[in-house]
Length: 208
Image (cartoon, rainbow, N blue to C red; front, side):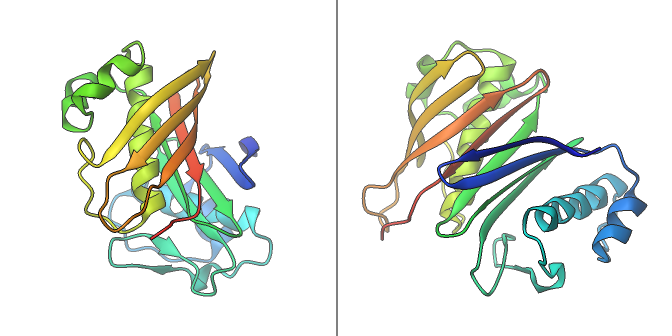
């Protein structure tokens, strides 16, 4: 199908794709070869890069590199980008000037039992708890993690959500990363809750 959603946020471009095509469509369209063992993961891999190429005309997908924590990047630095997948959805965000992080996650009831592994005790009172809202907070933490781009942060202690402002299905999520290598680095994320998934995305310069 075509782009499921497309919007701008803080000078970043965001696209969401719902996968309905076979693996062969994405593989042939990208010209890439993946040795990922499971079919679903291969489709997600191909689809993420397909959407990225759709957003950056003329992009040579073979130039993408992967760093030591598994984060893909473009060596020439023309674009910062972040890719997330939660079948059947792919979310991609790009920015021309600064780091960006995005995460998408379809709803699964088990997130409620897992929340104590990634939420700080002070974060439980920020929003009415449900599968959808806890999934949104998980997405916010993942988006922060990807934005920072160094790995190693403790999700509950270092990736902190300070406030959540809601307007129906749109959310403004104020966050910070507790990291001795960073100066005060507040990050405001855009959050969205849809019928079957949540998403969070944010971008800001990193001040060391």
